[in-house]
Image 1: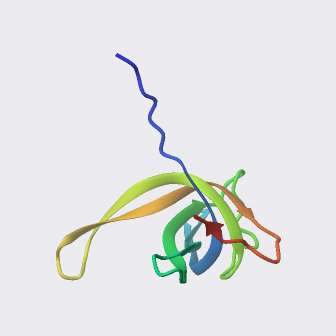
Image 2: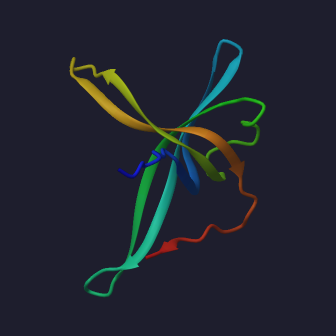
Length: 117
């Protein structure tokens, strides 16, 4: 039987939306959304831009600097998907996916191209 190596790695290049930086003890933590877009033409040949928001969590460390992180900044993030469970105000348990960031780079570019499919 052939063995398969599992991989949980996500790489995004997009624009930061909502951003909140807080402290857990002595460590700064950033929670932010990254907007990514794909442009394509639909069956009627109209241009469509499909936008996706991904929630990200980054802990400041010797590998990750949160300096310069701000809304509308262009970023390249690499991390792993993580399920976050919580109980809503209605008492029901919910699960959401977050990208736990292991690498973060602020992109100093005037434009960020759409991915064309």
